[in-house]
Length: 375
Image 1: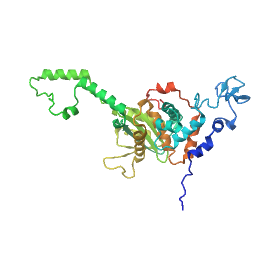
Image 2: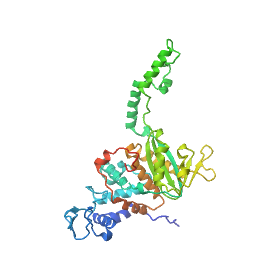
Image 3: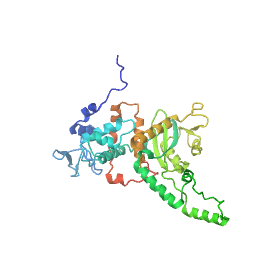
Image 4: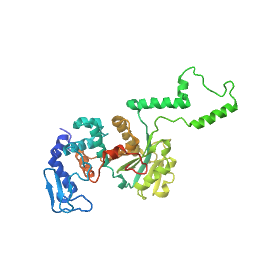
């Protein structure tokens, strides 16, 4: 006797039965964005929903009030896209059902497009999830931060970049202590060398101060996370480098997304020492003694971080700092709908298509802004 599935199977064939033609896709978007499917002019100064004429040859409507034309994709992530809607809805299916993300190379093979086209499509889909500013967490909320460094072994470009960086640092500062130990017989410069006086030592210190400190190749990206138990998660980039994990960066995020009646649960980091003043209670766990002490733990948010790192290591390898928040939004959405069926995941994502648009010029010129999660 076959065991019944917890969720009914939702395959690609089932998905294409719903969105396999342009007409089905357009009809779904019309029902999603317009009440009773009645076309309404999207221009703010008009909003006319009466006497709008459909021009079938161009698949656009003509507004009888403001005399402007508009399409079904106006004001959605599909706006100004030359790709058929059937291809977009197929991409949405792949985007939502993969547990640890989908690379642009894989999506391009699935859809039969170029890699750069698939890359832009995926970023448009991530932009549709850009609504985390309205997220509020309540009850017991676990908070923690993690550090994500690039994996040199899987990225040849990073290996070349590191080689050039190390050569530049050696030119300025000389060999590193690691290379000195590695090269046997290398004459180490010590203060005990013959002829070295206090004046020479002081002069070397002055020269070293002018040159500055030796810089590491790639600083880790610091990610801050919050998990409402039996609820949703919120992830956000603090910056690049160990020094970014500090109270001034963390507390504005907590106060923006967590209600004052909540209980904050964290480790014993000094970042969260004053949390009890702003929230109902603050519980801490001492990780030097154990991961669960008297029922207090932050294993939930650490589990989120574990899957985030597996997604990066297994699918994306190396992410740019200015795009990192977009991938965090994708991971947050996937985690928040983890227990739902594949069809429910798709249905949960589709309403997010409205009111979002990302132009290619905006995407490639994007810079990291730590004060704005949408950046």
